Image (spheres, rainbow, N blue to C red):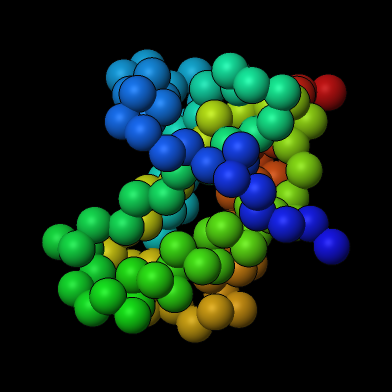
Length: 117
């Protein structure tokens, strides 16, 4: 079973900065925005941003972050990416199954952009 390893995380502002400054890939839905750059390491890394402005309650923000991490853990991208996932206000209105389906669809769309066939 895949595990969300520490090397699979964007930890510091220096890790996030290049992705926010000039994202090479953008994929979005009504609930999430994916920003990605080609990876600076040999593994894909994830950063999750769930603003308190968008989702007020901490338990709900944590639920969204947990679902994003779980989806990332189970999805293997064709090339290593530095990926930042931003949650929008509408993400809080969906149940876990709908959030997971939305995230999986965005992961597939991002994969198609990264490695077009």
